[in-house]
Length: 564
Image (cartoon, rainbow, N blue to C red; front, side, top):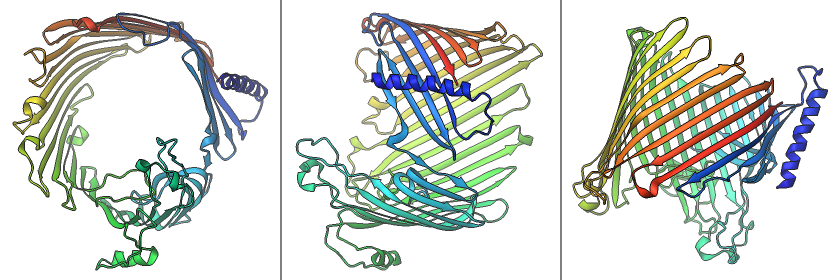
């Protein structure tokens, strides 16, 4: 760790020397060095609780970035102090994607996306190219998608994985916002990359193979109508050592896959589809979306997929009164158990609405409402009423703002109210789960146009009603309320910036009354063009009325920073 810190310091001083030597260099230099160095020291003290920091923290941190021709960046960073030390550099995963006109090359560790259901951002070690001459869209990548990791009986906690290599190709036609692409991905595990004989039984894994064929498109049919579609069929073989089978079935995709891969007993063919139809103009927009992903749909070109879902969603926005009013709403339904092989089928419904009204530059109103429902119905077995999930989550927020502007000051007043409620329609569980909360905030913000002086005052109130079965007392309401004050000012021709904040919140919970006081002070001084000095103090006094939750904390910190 000491060597890491010394290396960082040497890099920083060398960079400063290079910068001084290059003061007269032309602005179009190809190699650039930038970064910063920060030193800090502080104090920490507490009573009533175990210390959550070092009594006297200090340290040195910094970062250096070397930029080479072609846009290649090499960042280094390090931290050295009595709270630990670390050093980070980019060579564990280094990659570059230089671009020239309509051609882009990929080399090293890269993540590339061709479509959502084929190659979708999985990191690989290898190379590739993307060409877009005119309306033609061509792409190809090849590399290692997973490295070999062995697990042995002496080290059973390691999750084993085979070395996995693969490729993906894309052929399409169109522009970035109006195109049709055909994509294929194929990847396979190397059966000889790890020793399965030495695997622990609970971590035993099998080599897999995957081929995905997909179509992705974004089409502007006429001036205002947009069609989006992403389709994919995935053949995933979980064990390539399983017995071979014949590809049969009426589905033409089965026959096509049977010609491109070797079907086995562990091979599963699944499909994924998402499509949208939208209309957009200056009065607003309308959009309908559909998604269906088969159970166990997988692609080796992505890290995770939520499978076994089918959903329908509609969105509408309206711009009214010459832009002074805006309405937006959406509603959707989603459910699982597409193969009808689960014990229960879970359905979700989501609805939301937002209204924004701005009759003038000084007055504005916003109202939003959302409702999330969750329910179950029987699948392959009857559901037990005491375990059935049937819940509804309602959230509503309203905000009013009023502003006064003149040549010297700006005054902004805000009033916000929010309500959240969880309702359980199952009488057997509602007593344990139902809860609701309300929140109200009244705020005032003042800002001087010339002097840089600012101040704010916030009055807040929050109340939460907990489930009635919680132990301790019959009063299950938790309340927090109180003021928060803040101010900021700039001195010495705005070289010294200061801020002060204070809050005093009362709380009532389980029949007890307490308080939480916080105060903070910050000051920053610009010593020179690239040098700054910062001082910070923070005090916390918590007394919630419960004996075990009384404590005080004081933190302070002074820091010096230089950038280059």
